[in-house]
Image (cartoon, rainbow, N blue to C red):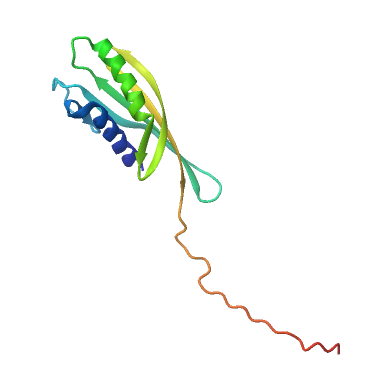
Length: 144
């Protein structure tokens, strides 16, 4: 599920910013001249809940390296667009709402943290009762 959410984040960023930017889910060389987004998952957590449910908390760090002559203005605009496109994403047919915060905005780049919390149900894989037979008798009603 982590990779699916990461892919959905990359798709949302690509859909908003177009093909003019590079989106990396793995380490890549810098200095291409184009704006670059780096996406990585930080501190994923899975908590068991009663029954067959799980609570999955995924924390993603999205780093943006600007390429313009006015990086601060560009990063402010990028943060607003990121907030709009990553607030609600879709992964594996379910919509997931995220909370986004700006962790750092400096001359080096912009770092945004996106937190997605999901509740997952595990499907039963074992069939505990395949066949059931019941036998019963009725007495004839005499009191002896």
